[in-house]
Amino acid sequence: MSVENIKEAVKEKYGQAALRVIKRGTSCCGSVPAVEGCPDPITSNLYDGSQTSQIPEEALMASLGCGNPTALAELKPGETVLDLGSGGGIDVLLSAKRVGPSGKAYGLDMTDEMLALARENQRKAGVKNVEFLKGEIENIPLPDNSVDVIISNCVINLSADKDRVLREAFRVLKPGGRLAVSDIVVRGEVPAEIRRSVELWVGCMAGALEENEYLAKLARAGFEVVNMEPTRVYRVEDARELLSSQGIDVDAIAPWVDGKFMSAFVRAKKPSA
Ligand SMILES: C[S@@+](CC[C@H](N)C(=O)[O-])C[C@H]1O[C@@H](n2cnc3c(N)ncnc32)[C@H](O)[C@@H]1O
Image 1 (tube, protein in one colour):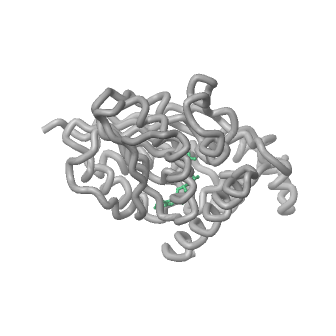
Image 2 (image 1 turned 90 degrees about the horizontal axis):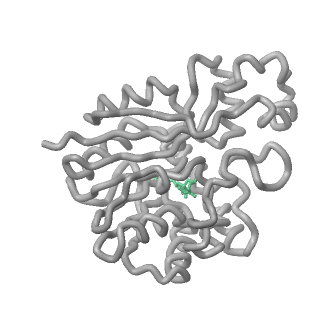
């Protein structure tokens, strides 16, 4: 698929997910569920009660992330936060509460239906220090050195130009600014065909990065103190139903799949000077 085709496929998929929530269904799901219906092992149970009680139900129902960057990121009152691929807005609304009225939380998304849902969720939450921007994470519509913290939840794996996303993130961060991102990554070598089948299950349109490749790309973009910690490691059983339905001999490929795909929390810092 070309870069443009990937973008159109992503917009189509997440536009439909947003419409399902607007029609009071669930977004079901960021990944293709292993069994019919939600919850799936990637997007479910990411937020605890202290967080879900702070946001409208629709924001939680639209949650399509694979981690909880706001719980893991250090956010201080007065800071400016940017969420790359903000979807229904869950992490933006939670960040806005953390940075308080003297801070600001931006959400950036390219899908109109998601932006409409996020703005409606902002209205329901009654949060003022939030702004949802339309645009692409490969061309962030914010000035250089303007953001303290960049978060993102299961979006960079969808991009066909990850180097550009990381360069843009670096550009808009202030010196000393932090990147705190949840994403799907692959551990070690996995044969291309098997990898593609699992990525279909996970929902990675453009492919997940191998963990060392991810860290190397961050360093090449200029980041320092880069590190990654797994938050959920997926077992072959999680994807058995989908893989079998594609005619794949799951037991034969199990050693290549089991424990190789994970949700991870990625941290990095833009140098201070
Ligand atoms: C898997 S959902 C995650 C949404 C949200 N972060 C969450 O945790 O619920 C991916 C979101 O990223 C957006 N997205 C994907 N690729 C993008 C891109 N290149 N530029 C801007 N938004 C993008 C999609 O429209 C969708 O809303």
